[in-house]
Image (tube, rainbow, N blue to C red; front, side, top):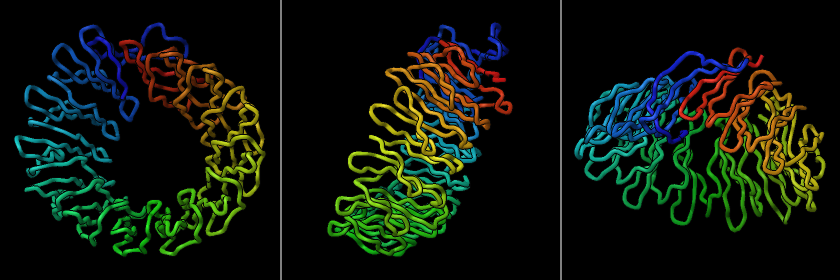
Length: 518
C-alpha cells in the first residue's frame, strides 16, 4: 500500500496534458481538489488499475480507475484487487451495518464483515460475516451455514475449486472444506495446507494435551507438540510433518513414523522431483543428515540447510569437523577451509560455487577452482543461463565486481549486483558516500540518494530503475529520465520494449506516464 495525506475530492480526467516533453506522454488518472482527505493509494497487480480511498466530511468512498464509488460512513479495509486485477473489493460501514463491496456493488448488510479473499483464479470471492452471535461465510455471493465461531484466513486450493476454513460450534472447532465439516477438536491449528494439485488438505487438531495430524479427513496417531505442519511434496503424492512426543522428535512420512531423535534441527524437505526427503538431526552432541530414512555421517555441526538439486538427483550441505568447514555433495566432502558459506548451485548441480575463508582471507570457489583472495566476498551468483559467475570482492577498501574471474573496481561500495535476464551483462549499484548510482556495463547513471525497483526487458542493453532525491522520485530508462514525482510505482516495458510506462503521484494528482525510448 502507498499512503499519503492531502485534501481532496477525486475526479476522473483523461486526455494528454499539454506541455508534455518530447518522448514523454502523461495522462492524468485522477485529480484531488480541496474538500476531502486521501487515506490511501492501492495499485492493482496490473499497473493499469489504480484504487484510492478518500474521506469527504463525515463520509468515505473508494475511487477505482478514477471513478468514485458510493459514499459510506467508513471504509474499514484496504482495496483488494483479484490476482488478475479485474475485480476489486473492500469492506464498508453505514451506521451499524457493514458490507462487502465488490466491483462497486455492495452485498447484504451484516453486523460485521471481515477477511475479503479472492481465489487464485480470481473467479471466486469469500468473506466472513456475522449477525448477533451467528457467524457465516459468504462465498460467491451466497451465505453458508451459521456457526458459533469462524476463524479466518480462508484458504482456496491452488486450482480454486475448494475453500477451507476453521469454524466452531458448542465449544469445538472443525475444518470446513467446500461446505463439508470434518472431525471436531478443541482447537484447530493454522495453517490449513492444500497440496499443489488442490486434491489434498492437511492440518493439525488439538484435543486436550494431544495433537493429531489430519490429511484428507483421516486422523493420524497422537503426539504432544507439532514442530512442522503438514507439508506436501511438489508432486502432491506425499506428505510429511514433524512432531515431538516426550523428549523425542520424529517425522511422519505418508503416515509412516520415522526414526526418533533427541532433536530435529531443520524442517523435513522434499526434493523437487518428490522422490527424496531429508532433514538434519542431533544426537549425543553430533549432527547428521537423514536422507530417505538413512543416517549420514555425523559431524560436529551441519552449518547449512539441505540443498536439493532441481532434478532431484543430488543433495548438498556444509558441515564442520575438527575446526574445519567444507561442502558435502552426495556424501562426498569437498576440500576443507576455515569456513564456508553462500552455497550456490545451478539446476542439476552441473555447476557449484561457494565462498570460503582461509587464514583471514576470503575467496570464491567455483566448480572446484579457487578464485582470487579478498578481504571479503559476497553476492556470489550464477547468471540466469548458468554460463557465467559474478560476485563482489573487497580488498583494501576497494569494491570489485568480479565477473568470470575478471575484476572491475567500483568508485564506492557495490550494492545489488545482478545479471541481466539473458546473462550477457552485469549491473550494480555503486554507493559512494551518501550517493548511489547505477553502473550498467560501461554506462554510469546519475547520482541519487537511492536507486531501486530494477526492471529488465527483452533487450540486454536496456533496463529501467527508480531514482530518489530527498523525497522525490524519477524513472530512468534507455538514457531518458522522467520528471520528479512524489511517488512512482509499477514501471513496465511496453511496445516491444520501445517504451516504458509507470504510474506516479505529483502532489494531489495521479498520472500515467509513458516514456518513448526510441
